Length: 173
Image (tube, rainbow, N blue to C red):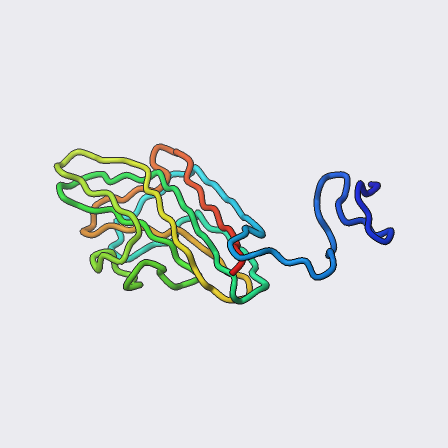
């Protein structure tokens, strides 16, 4: 297709609006989003594991400038079924590292970013919202939502096949 904007006869913006090329020594000031990735899923799964288990809600982003940050936003349709005073917990991992403070792989260590607690023997459900700013360095990084249960109760992900999503944004340093 014919470019709609050219510099020195080189197509910079294609007719579909995509950018390909460079403009001199242009750089984005600190705090600008330079790319975004998004993935959503709506397939219900459950676990009664007391250690965190990976969900299928995962995406990756390639960072070229080691000083840039990644903002991770995840929204999970979660639920907890069976048992009184049980907890289903949700967190975000980069690769095999739990990004929650403490970074434990065990739900009972309270190293999670969001949780749902039942108050009685009835089921409970809600959206769990998580946000984290990461400094992963240059390279391709995979982010995945994990979940688990504190005491063998049934923790649900995408309960009733509701949509859960993850958004990754690279931000200039």
